[in-house]
Amino acid sequence: MGRWVEQRGLDYSIQAVVMVFSFVALPCVLATKFTSWADLNSSTYPRPQFYETPSRKEQLEMWQLSIIVLSYFTLPHYIQRVYAASDLRSLKVGVSILTVSVWFTILPAIYIGTVGVKILDGADTSSPFTSIIVKLMDLGGFSQAIGYIALTASLAAIMSTADSLVIGISQLVTSEIIYPFMPDESPHAIAWSGRLASLATMIVASLIGLAWREGITALSRIQFPLSAQAAPAFLLGLYTPNEHYDCHPWSIAAAA
Image 1 (cartoon, one colour):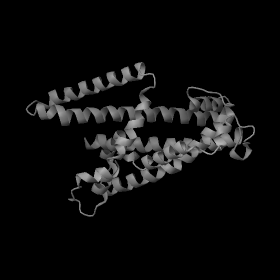
Image 2 (tube, one colour):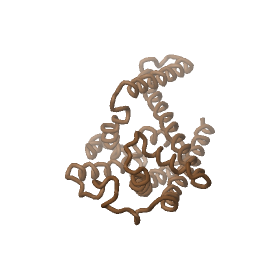
Image 3 (cartoon, helix red, strand yellow):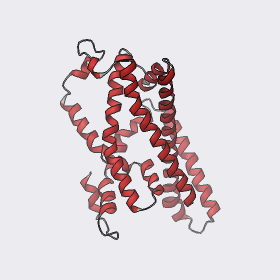
Image 4 (cartoon, one colour):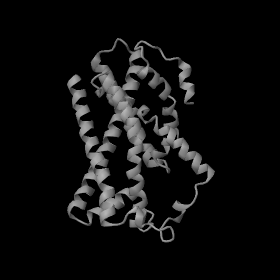
């Protein structure tokens, strides 16, 4: 088990380095081969509403997103990566870096999005990021290599996230629901219960993705606010001086 966790931690680290490199290189390539922020003009920009003052509702939504970003580490696929931490100090450093790094990675994403609108000439595509990457790969050479790296790294991250979510759900269902009702079952039977829970999770997720018009990503509207409620208890338990400190249940109300 320890060797598996160590290997997963190494996989996550390599994946993170590749993604950071690609998303830092993408703005540089876009500025060199296409256009940069300095070249954008509000009178010719395909989406002039980007230059308008946000409405009160949009401003409130932006503030809500900013607060939710601080609790990204409470998402299930991040919590599952907690097991890859070698010790408590590493976990604290990792959570701190994760909380701060989101703000730095947002800047390249904004750059890619705003410049990408100009590159695509305001075209309304189902996947703007993929369309921008295709434009890069059409150039060949270094730009094509960066495009391939960014695309494959993104797909790997998506698959890793889906894998972690399935594992997280399976573990919760098995340890918190199935095992308490069947404490005398053999480890083999419990393991098969976990596999069936994973299969059921995949079936439900596939049905939602295929049948729900808004798509499974619409669940983020409730997922992030719910996960943010776990942030106070998580932070108190992680950073309080006494490792035996018990968090008061009402600490969750601070995020609610």
